[in-house]
Image 1 (cartoon, rainbow, N blue to C red):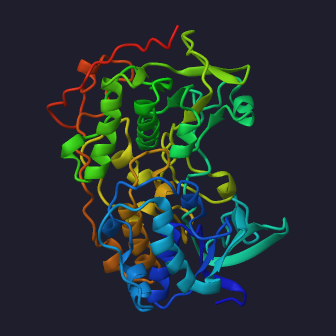
Image 2: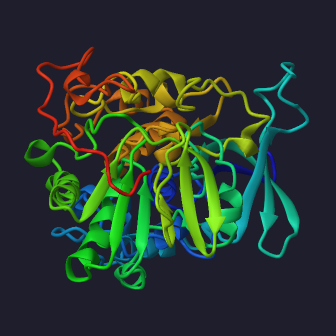
Length: 444
């Protein structure tokens, strides 16, 4: 090994990054974890008040547990932690066992091959990676590595409210004015909006969580008005799989949101694709491509999912799906345009391998724009990837995980089809019964 070259550099000290380090150390390999935040799992801390729908046994990695148990730690076994509890009881203690192998305030701004830009073939695989950093004090640094695992996640690259994947006209200004936010509200945040009109944009778990929090306040504060905006012209699987979901709390999350709509606490607007955001007197007005306008809102919660940050990987050769920006080999299994049946299969080192030897993407970032990632998926990924790094082919190819079924079947359906046609072309049959909801009165 060359002097000054790290065996493995891991980008991100979140659940998968820390687990990868634990697996490497267990196999006698060293690791350096680079974290842009000032503490482990800094992204998780930003939604620390949110309760996870996975139970404790599905939120800890096997190698990490073994490492922690050697210190006298006992794994939590019951309940559903909040993000803050996940950090306090598991992720922070795990990071502490890694000591100075974790560097905080180290933001990765580029990854390349030493002396080779993306276009150069000659001797490329023999050259170490160069990881370009910007430290918290603004200074620049380069770190060399033989192998790089990108576990940086997607939290800080949320999708915009704009329906075409780009910020709507006026969206950036509305964010700067504090009228729009990607944050999931706390109960205190929601209570401060008790007599206001608020809007939630998005149809995934973050949106359902936001609806749940806001509707709890609306039950006791009749002055609060909540409008929930879906881009699709159908309700589809917005409310999840209910009692058929093998993660009960995930199923319950969607059902609580459904009850809030059916009870009249929430007005649901479908087929609303935001084209413009007008900032008007301390409120935001969303305007759709078809000219419809929502009533002015004090706050708009943009819960439209996430996308991977590929900006610092411009010099790395990647094979990514053109739609999801996920590794091409797993895209068909996770693509919501194709199906939403049950669970997806576990993914391992062979699925995540890139044309750049020694580089892999794991964790939420490996799912690109797909919304179905679970912590369990990531732990299986890093187990397999680290086994491959260690030369243990049998362990790398083995699948040690069966993912829980979502209880959702019927595919994504046609984007603008009526609900009764949404199951057409489904990967399963028959399609679930879907409820028909009218247009909200908050639209003109």
